[in-house]
Picture 1 (cartoon, rainbow, N blue to C red):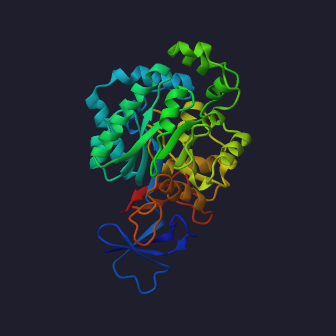
Picture 2: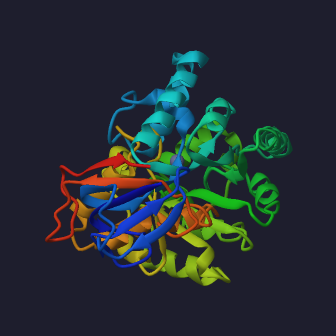
Picture 3: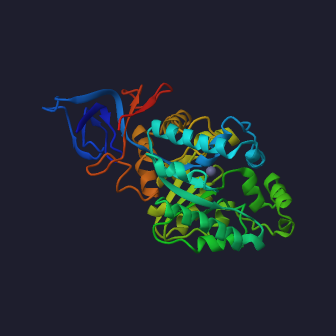
Length: 393
Ligand SMILES: [Zn+2]
């Protein structure tokens, strides 16, 4: 049994408890949360800083970890995709597997307990089986040529079967509005079953949106180059997120990732289209967005909804740290309350990934992992650029 205390305990869903004490069993299961240090000094571990639940990284691509420091910053969406595609053959399978292992260990050390991870291949599965992190794998489908829709679907089904045989959770998701034919989008989106989770890269760049609104721009040219069928494409004259609304399933949780170019109209339209907005999650990846676009999403557009945080991959981030994402968000939006940032970094992601029975809050019966954040400004209740995370449990 361990008893852990710090200046404040942020449970993830309650107001911070000053000098609270967490009682845990040897497996990291929370047995109790005590309000103060009365009579509980014996064998107490006391830390300076704040304690938060293990983080949830709602959007990552661990299999792209080999691309760390490989892709130029602020290159824009099309150049980023081109660089990822061109670089794939510069590394051996052993290199890629080695970097997956490194990234998994890195995330665990950074206090991440759960990851929503996008995979196009199976190279990360062996590490996920061994990992101390709980993964939900989004097996990603993409392909804009109509004739290949069935083949791509069966290839991704094969990967989902492989996951399930390995006792890993996961399901198929589409990559984005611009990278799938309507046929492939329909097959995938009609196949969601209870417990599956929808996730999509949503209105991430201006060039993506231009393709749908005006049928022009760099993304449109790139897509036409890859698939001449798009020479005949009639652009729908609606935003890329509005285009997706016909496909997003309503019976499962949906994670809309990035949202960098969303407008208030888009958010209104999306929210209205959900029967139950408890199922709708807005995932922000601020460091990745700055890396590729030098711009982040306007969180105020959906702050009344469920916001989650993601690191995206090491192809567009120098670290896989949810705390670093929180620090950047706070630097760019000093008005965000620390208690909200913690909620976005923990319980909201756990709910999005259907693991809030075990993760996301420090509550009796859960084993969320326990993190200490040091160098927090305890008067202003803000993170600082010196804040660091140390995993205690
Ligand atoms: Zn992504």
